[in-house]
Image: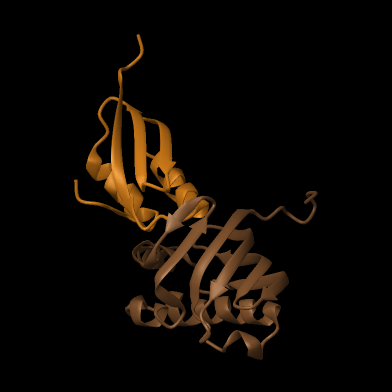
Length: 136
Length: 73
């Protein structure tokens, strides 16, 4: 990953998740070596109050791979992001197509990165993104 | 007289978010006789209530169809 100071916070987050998706999620290779380029071994991700460590994040890759459509059309739409040192607060929407439906998930989270651009901590909340005609 | 119900709990590997819970729930709810499905993402538990005895093999197949795995009992 590109170190944080070389990007705007918005671009850094968009690039992080886009390349994570391309290099870790897509394909049928062992995801662990690729994941190590994006997450530190001691990563802690708290998502909607659920604590996920390296092993749980790794075990999540296989079902995600199985459920994504062949052309998953995944997109990480970063609405805003603010950096403070090695931390970024961001509001984004994850778009993807699964085998059965299209999904869009809003995420608001704080992320902490190492100097070389790996994520070491994340704490956020999510919701299904409102459809365009629904009030947000 | 209504048929007796049974409840079984399983451990699912790979769930991490609400999309995971929804995917597993939707698939298990399709099984004949299932009346309630509860997923706890934090612990990875799946609790299934059904009329009569639901085959664990049927639950395993549904979970695998959803893209996940059941832990060994």
